[in-house]
Length: 355
Image (cartoon, rainbow, N blue to C red; front, side, top):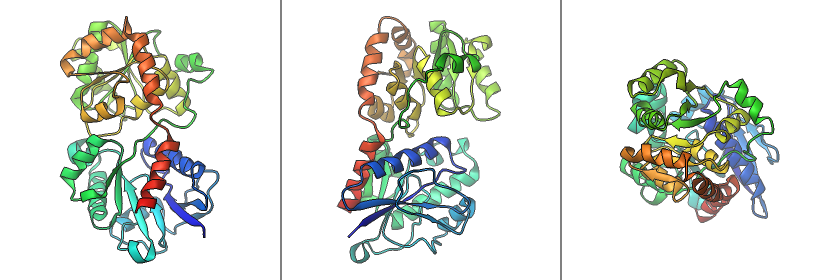
């Protein structure tokens, strides 16, 4: 008897990191499928799955926006039962019988911004995410989060009991510095020497302050439309000059890999409960990591970088750009081996076997 795991392949109209996660995990599930098991896809109307090796693809009658609204209200006609895993919160969370019919539905929560920092998201997104977690409390057989710190935090937000599972994310498969990296960096008009800062809101100030003291240019990645001026002003307010502050919007994998690989270090300033995509990618490339202490940074970086209180970020960055660079580079590259979509997929298979 063939066991079919159906994955909600949500790649259209969503955050780019979540789209990459859906792709990476689904590919990993296909590669690691146990004997007698296959992977099929569930996609909204108008979307096409780019994943090779799926046993079958069921295209639902509703487009993504309408599908998200219908599933929020608990309307999941046409989906069917069986084993369903969603790499996001988009899932048919309805009443089902796991014991007698072997129906299972599991979902994934990559960040808690809708609860911890709702002002950073559109109101519609906040309302939808909160509603879907409430549905998960009622109907999900498991809720997957990527770090133990997030598992502790989500347990404070929702009464999920022992249904929370920790399965980490990873860099995109084959993520490496491209052969034309120098040309890509030139196209992005990057300076010869720079660091990359990741963060959110006022936390960026800590990174800019450290860059100013280290006298190095700072590049901020994944900046939403309209936020560049705010960041440049914030940098200037803590002594980092405008001419040394560079802003990039969302980049494709090759350009992002080129940018990260050319950095002297990546400085992470956010303490939010959110998976650190850029840090995992930086470690994959062997780029030194300096991060403000948080539960998520502790879980992700471990001993693969410098995780310090915000007040020690300046000194840690100077060390990372100087005598500590090679040590942090090696530690980060070693830590990167802990993350792969294949290992994450194996844990998803184990989760459904356990359920």
